[in-house]
Image 1 (tube, rainbow, N blue to C red):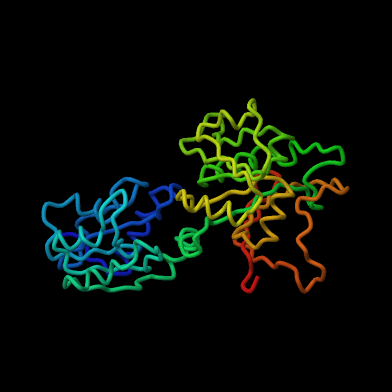
Image 2: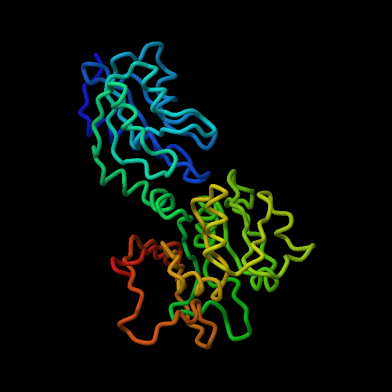
Length: 339
């Protein structure tokens, strides 16, 4: 006999399933389990990426008859037709009797699934494990609500905050393990932002590669911020994901254009000028700071002028994790409340 589970336990299972899906591609990670009258899980599903069945439809596909079942899903079922049909309609058509979900869909077009289900006579139970699910979906929920991508600003520096030596050399401040983590963070992003200055000075490839130098399955779109065209022979012209040149330095316009393309996660890797501009404009949602146990001194700081004139104006951060990578440290942080 299958084990009976509570709504909380079923939601935690849905959250585990959601984590199997990609963090990139514009859509959220969502998981779903179907329970019978006894509370036993009879089917599971999760979303595998844009254009594939949503978690609810994936779970329903494993059963010939879902009439009278309870669907436990981490995000409110969508209520719009995009690349796939509305999940609310799929659940109604399948005869599901109850839908339990954690977090409401913040989408301006996709919200309203719960109301559609209620109007069809389906019992709806919202808010189960809402805090846990909201934390897991925080970047996506924030991006959708703000209508701009979630922005992570990355830099590597010495302990005294220098990103390069006096002569401009910066390879390599950090070691192999830290550099590999950067590739992993690139692969977990929809786009990488750099400025034209970085492109002209360093001719970066901005690909995401594995330990052996191989291209990782997901490649973020390189986005060059600025008015100067990328040279015809630049490495970025050969990037497997293509190239997007903004033609403007207006960061709000750039982020709005990326949002319109379905880009939800942006990784800023463009050097002190771009990083400082993003921070000063208030667009930095997260920081990935790689610290090497070295001192350089000099004027080449990792972050430039932020328009701050007094300590009371300091942008305070809340550290979310600290990880040692070889001899280096990776400090992940987000703006503290009120900052």
